[in-house]
Length: 611
Image (tube, rainbow, N blue to C red; front, side, top):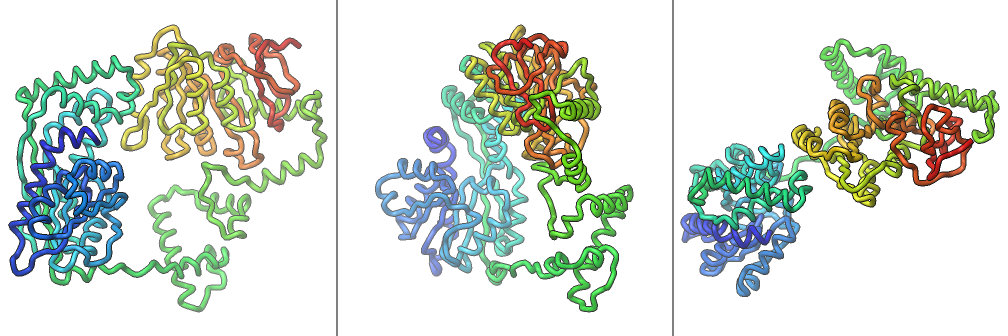
């Protein structure tokens, strides 16, 4: 923020502030002078200063300056003169789409380079209309073209696989159609000739300031931010060289759209809030018996009760027409057989990734088994417990398509417990790299503390606009891994946060670059199959609770035996353990539980276990 005020303020924002003040002055009618001006997105106060010096002070107008950012407003207060600070009311934390001002409060609204950022332009236009008096005007500027910003955008895209978000947002209204359309929809463009006018200028920026600008433009990019100081300097040198090649004069061209709007006759009528939504039909539908909804048994006679049913049946018919392969009969039978409590409790369950609902048959079978089977303490060699354990292992091997000769199964309290085992035991060292996807579960992000404590470096792989792993950034990070070190890539097969399913190709590519891979499959496997014979991850974290919904406290780590040999567990807790030597492993000290029901069934030890 300090850089933008110190360097770009006088070269870029001050000239356009003076332009806005001139345009407003020319439009003022002597017979109807304005009394007040509201500036939104005031930034560091450069445009505020022009509005005060050229309009508010000589004409005796009230000037109010606002910004969503408190940092920007504090910077503005430090930058403007004492007189302006005394005469102008500054307000921070003000969203231009939801302002704390009464209706009909101002005659003019000014927004210098702020309309690019709010996502809902129509809502902003509606709010402008609300706080303006009849006949009030809007004056705004947005970038049509900015050569400096555009070059920074190109360089960040080419070098880091993702453009600078700040530069992208700043240039997002090169075509002003989104804002002019919003002005017309809210009636702000009907009485204005030429809503958008192009206004060019150019400014000089020396190498030192250009370099500082590039640093500020790139520092929020994950890949640049994680570079060491020498690498950053090298990247800045190369980008500055490209700037010299394209703009040898250092004079950067700028064009800005000058946007105008006015609250015309009848425009204010549409500013009144619409009616509150009516949920009465939905309420009637939710209280209707299931048999009535699906079968039409005992059709209600009242029209108010029939209308929601007609709407539901019409939407269902449209859905089935669009997706003819949808197995409606099977799904409804499954719902009735296994999840009838949804209808009985009038509940729509939407948290399947957080924890699925347990099927009624599963609950019945577990209850029957517990009532008819004697399961001994899992530490004491109970044969029924051992049989249950071996059966569970066999089913896991079958479901995940992995062989006991290649993979070991370590039962844990949950997926987080499986991740913790890897985090505690991984041979991180100086020179190791840990690569983490930005949308990892918090349990996976916890790896970084174990890694840093042993001298390893941690790098984050950013996501693209569709929230998928950015391929170019992942590839560069893998290509930079130092040979001969223990590296780890950890990412989710399916994101817990977004539901995006990431490409499993990175497992093989990372292994080819010398890294081991921890695949968090907790969100994926309740809905899909992870084929370990095809993708062959080193470690897979699983939560059985998310698959079955019952019982809690059950998960596992599926680990390659060859990778498990490289781990060094730091601790041990009580349980009956089978020596890893008996399972074809060296004596790493991993405890192999004797039953799937024991929540303490996987614990590491600091020294080899001898039977």
